[in-house]
Length: 248
Ligand code: ADP
Ligand code: MG
Image (cartoon, rainbow, N blue to C red; front, side, top):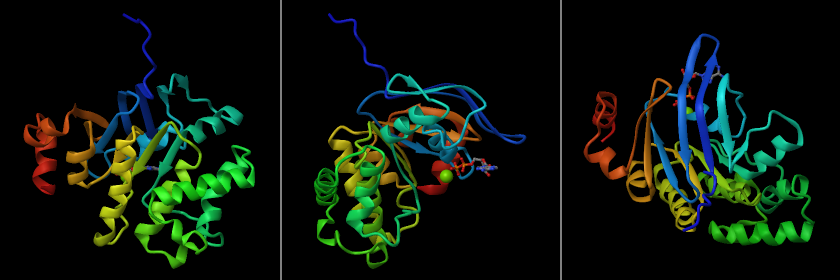
């Protein structure tokens, strides 16, 4: 029997966050083990985005501690840049650089931050564009692609940093309905490959199929932390029942 246990990929301990008087994260304690796919659900304004942003320190927290792969979040400097490289993030808005090609968008951060050579960065970028099914668009500009394609590029761009964990904040919410599935398919592929993922989404089909675990937030608190099966068939809290009643 080995006693060695790897640190959880994400560990949040009693995290509190305020915007002025508004208490947006309340005593959040959460561990995400390596390789787990966690879907975060909850009504608008419940703190889901703030939690994601706190995990790569786009938002500072007021108290508590967050660690990624056993390392407490550094406040600034090189250590913070290294942390950000380990935590990939994909937002609702893809934020690609409009005046760079798809390939250049994916190559940029690895050459700037990871100091990869151009050749190395290009090779990796092409592999990732292949993986998200879009290598044939490499020389186009973002505006020439559909929303679904642009979001797949944004995923490739995040993966180019070789992150240890990926955070997705409503990655399909801005897409036309017919483009949602192609993005979810890429995310499902990542999950199958063993990526640790925290996914805020309203796509309940994805939550049921791809999540190992569902976290339901309301008013800045984690109200339920359970399996998708349990959450969708037997939610415990009134707030979760109310939420499911509105969306299902
Ligand atoms: P969710 O992603 O679940 O919709 P958010 O994390 O975006 O929730 O927001 C949680 C609460 O914090 C909301 O009440 C929101 O209005 C507030 N909030 C979010 N960002 C800011 C900010 N930069 N300044 C002030 N209030 C904010
Ligand atoms: Mg949000």
